[in-house]
Length: 240
Image 1: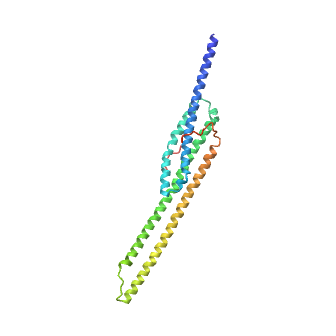
Image 2: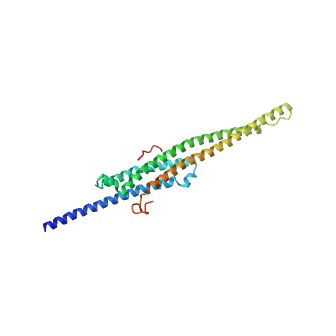
Image 3: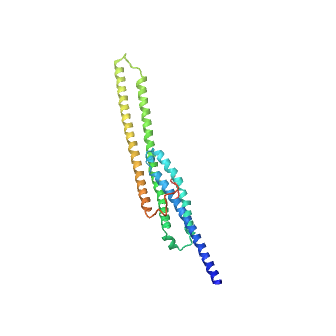
């Protein structure tokens, strides 16, 4: 009878250990899913065509907002690591678990995602500064055009003296030539603005495409069982 009781107690203890381990594993899987959902949501937003259609300033603002959201990665990564420690398994066993390999991949992707977004912000920040300089130059030229038109319109035509009339005509021709020059400079600045916008958006898009491919490659080992389809949908950020 004593032997039977000992066996029952041993079995009960092992069963409790297995149940605890199962709960720990479920918590780990849940945290990994949460991290995956967070990384995926940010990535989808960055790869959205709607984002690329925004102005440079709006794109910069949007990415800066996403960087603030990414600060939450640190807490999520910490939660995953805490769950891994709670498994009470040898380190080599934990490292070999598919869910832990997935967690490691996600941590790397989260860090790379932050780094890429910071790079994009730097590109856009530089482009926005240059764009605003062009805009200011255009405003200055438009002001010069308005002043030249005002001089032409406000000065009465002299008809009493042929020499004064000729001088006035010559002066008006000079002003008209300046106006044409200003207009050409404005057209050139508009072209520069367009080229600057295209180059900046293309550069950020290339970084996003690279990031999407990296995320896709890193998720290859995820099975439907590990991550089911029912997942919940200022450059000074510290990297996770």
